[in-house]
Image (cartoon, rainbow, N blue to C red; front, side):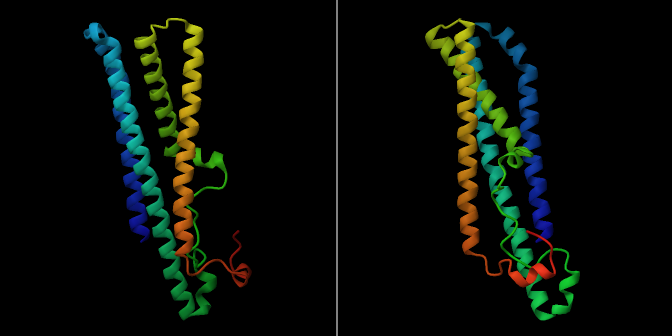
Length: 199
């Protein structure tokens, strides 16, 4: 199970790296595409940014699913450790991690910790691509060339989609965490505190 968790970590990393390569390639060829296909510049940009946005949403969803699966594997490994400790209490002091199946948590309690990994990268790129979509649509249908209003619209779009993604991810993780709590058979108990110094 530890190996499976490591495999999923690698899958998650590879998925994010692939997405970043696609984004980098898109940014690289974007000026050339604009120059070569100038007559359809704005609609073409809209399609490109929309494709990046949809790909980022799909990647974010898969990363969240991988993260949940990794937690499940670690919890199952804790349950196995509990079985060995129940068979022989003398090994309790030598077990690397507490023999429990209610940790690690799926949802991080501190919001800034959730931004330390790939989730933060994906939500930021998603927000940028969505903002670009909004600005292109504003330009196409409203012919707005006022830089001040473009800036205001861009900031509002960025902040809105960023918080919506945060809310969606947190809700998804919270739901998964509640489901896993129902499946927990060996939670952390008071006597274990004498052996394991964890919160």
